[in-house]
Image 1 (cartoon, rainbow, N blue to C red):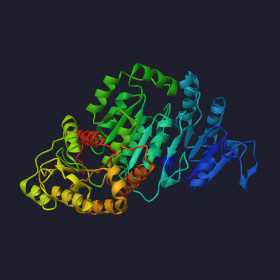
Image 2: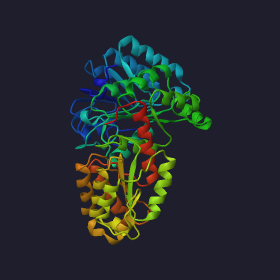
Image 3: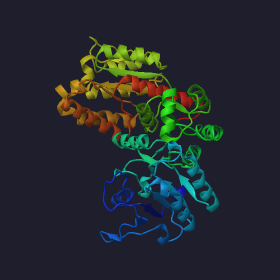
Image 4: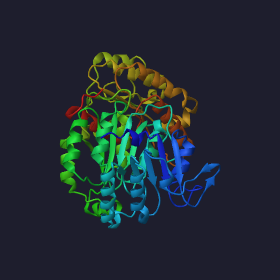
Length: 468
């Protein structure tokens, strides 16, 4: 399905446009103006003739023909009349932000909308959703739009709240979003249509999705099977439990299937299934790193034996391997540290030398030369660094980054997050986190999330894709 004019509309009409911000609904007209949408923008509301020098239209019949995208924010009782007007004006795509359809038991209205749409070649987004986010086109449902970052992640979400949260989290974590859609009740354009469209976009490396139900499971699985062979598809299921399924039904009218069956089918067709929203973000971050893991053999380095032991246990439980480093690698690491309270095996315990960024850098470069290691995970104690090494909060990460750039293997830093009630430490952590993310490195706040993400990514790579 060609959705170019949906994600890259040359003209947009906003039905029910507000004269000012607020009013209990998303101010699409103001958002599009503020973020700099470059196409033709038509606000429609019979209450206003002109606002700030901009003409308001009293109805859709006053608009020119062939508008690419119409966004509807008016009450549900007006939806069918608006749909008929859209047919008269030969609108290409219509997005109903408006709620009150099948999720409220009003299924007959959805059928009537769909009948008009199919008779007139109009495609429907939603209803009951927040719509489209495409930074390249200057289209958004929020005021934050990413710039100056590789845009290689796509997201499709049945929930407007989850979709909005994904965009916010992606921006905060420097995940470059290429295209996003909140699709709600999906009475026309369905999850598999968006997935297929994203799969064909060469700029998109990773596709993430939040699903409550599928209208045609077989059609989705067919698209998923093809897509997952070339790109990771990360899925979070809403309504995994009976109670959650009931909530989904009242949310988007979803008829959720048995989760065990759903989970098994998705995995068999190549999807990476996650259980939490945070796992979805973490996996997208890992999968879009400049270098991704090629295998399960991890090299871990830290200051202190406790962190090393903990990592060993979690790595073993998570399916990763910690092979002993080659003799020449251990000798190279040992050149910079003493043999007291340290270990050069794997995991590497650098003792107090682990607080020296140059020695950490030297160690990861040594690991890069070891043929038995696939991925390198340095652990940084933000509590210690922000207390005793504040002068290195900016310079330290740069040393690690310079090493990581010239290495063959991925470097995945873990930044501890223990003193969460200390603003100075949290500021230090954010500063280091942003530095690593700007350099394209995945970053985690604990080893278990890091291990989980690597394990899940390798599950996909070994079962479906070729990796990078």
